Image (cartoon, rainbow, N blue to C red; front, side, top):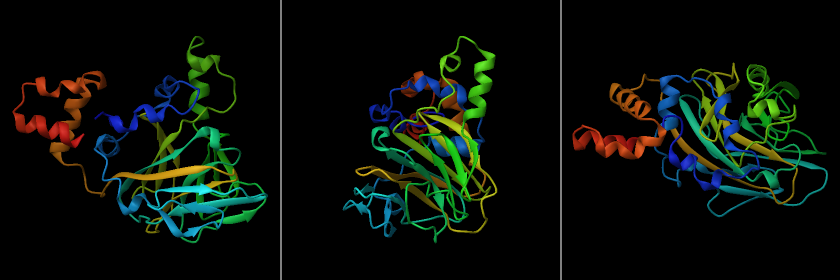
Length: 284
């Protein structure tokens, strides 16, 4: 459970980088109730089809696991390789999680989304997701946002600079101007109705990275890599339609927000009927 991301996003497996998770909460941005609800809701079954990489749409240098939830890039010289999800979306708000060990990323490690006909292999070592007009990517090693073969911005670098100026004694003021170390697990937050793609890490929503995504077009989570042995896992976490959130869900979110993340294991002590306690425990 949790206001921003539930406990299964904050478990031990997320500790995949040497930098502390405390680097990220100051970079978080306020979210709408719709986004807050979907990020705090329980995850769907791991066997959901939306958690699978496509067995047809991937570079020949990527090998799929039997369950199709993990791909491994075989060693290959002078090749950039991509893979997209089996199932895309045209509408609604959706969250996927990509698990990728930072030690197995190498250069040009990119996560993002693509259209159906995104090219899945190219010669040389380069950014593939975001390297054309059909895809949008976040290069994890450099923190750069890519689209149309161009670097659009550094994400979330602008807010990091602002934080350094505000607090000379903060963790961020002690950091160099180099890239932020991105943890093993990253959540993609795609709002196909609003045409935006954002990212979340360590339970913190970092904000919208891309806007003005094409409406009514099927979009797929996608990754690209140049490192041999890189293993990348995909999991669909949750989604919702463009309809406004239900009042019951908003009330539940408000209760949990007032409890605070450290006290959310005390829901059974609230002066609420058992039915409402069960709803809070099972839905968030």
